[in-house]
Length: 533
Image (cartoon, rainbow, N blue to C red; front, side, top):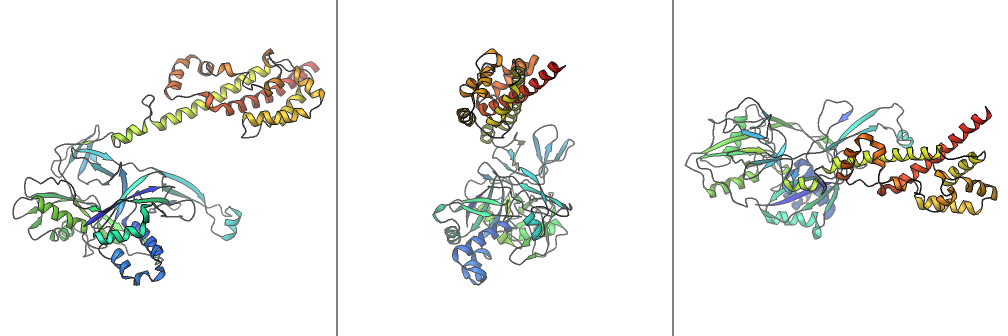
């Protein structure tokens, strides 16, 4: 059997809804089930072949989507590797990164269960997969009139939890070489990425994904560590739905898998079984109905089998791997019943977070700050810098000598320069001022020429020339006034995150002149009141 690796990247938040008890909250799964993946590929295949509503009558369609092809779930990717549900037998030290596998070790105090997705390297390093989710608040607009109005008369709200955009998941398609080539030709002609919409509210703002496909490769490729004895450990890569439909006892359900591995293979009852029950329940859009709920064993279940005729050979393991890739139980075409070998390691250690190359990519070239931390620090420094330059503008306005006509000048300047507009650049600022000055009267020009901030050039020359003249010398030392006694520590932080005020020249200019004009008017009004008294 051959396999194709499918890489799924979320281009927008995706809501893969799951059951929960919350009335106003839709929670999301943190992976894409095999049922979803098969549905996406089936829909694209029907469109590519023009089968329409009679697709079920097409022999090729039934062979690909209801026959021997297996569509596995897309689990979070760790680098380029498809992660899997970590075995339920793993426990992690609460105070460190050491792990224990209870399949071969006894439990000890100070350890807790290790859950989630991850991968284990050949030297026993466990890399966990981290899935980012986000929460969005929505207003319920159930009727047509409410949708047109854009508001809800009743004020009902609900929340969507979604898989955040920009994350990568890895799935797999398993089948014969001919079937996979036919499927690949329909889904990704010319090896172009496939775009689709998945999950809840996929016709609005959620669900956009990009899929890329690898070339077919053998399922059992690579070296397989051969056990030294007759015991082989197996784990469930996906949930297992037994044919009997009953899962009251894990051992009885697993015997259905063991019986398919060969006549000389038996379930090792002397070793523990770590398992959990899981329900499979999903909505089928074509039917417009929910599928009957099925109960099985959860992914991550781990157990041991024994070969009654002696030790395992490499050929035996390759045969077992092919059988495991074919699957066991019901709904195998949706990826259920996938089993994989589980290797025992002398020592297991939890990696700090992610693969080394991922960690290095997240860190910048300056210092040891993570890119997210660095971005947050830069935003805080930017806000503090703008606030400090507003203080500089207030000080300049208060030290300027004013005449009776100054208030009108500042009001007109504020209008001309549109200082309250949310977005503008220095270039727009100066072009508008120059155009207005050409049609202004002599009185306004004379009054404007008398205003000299900080005793230097007149304000009209400043606005038509270098608008940063009043504060550009303070761009280097602004942190000293802003942070006072902590200026030294602030300078180290500024250098560590490479914060440069010059990169925000337009925002600083806007903040300075907006504050200057507003405060100059207030200063002029205060002077009038004192003179009247």
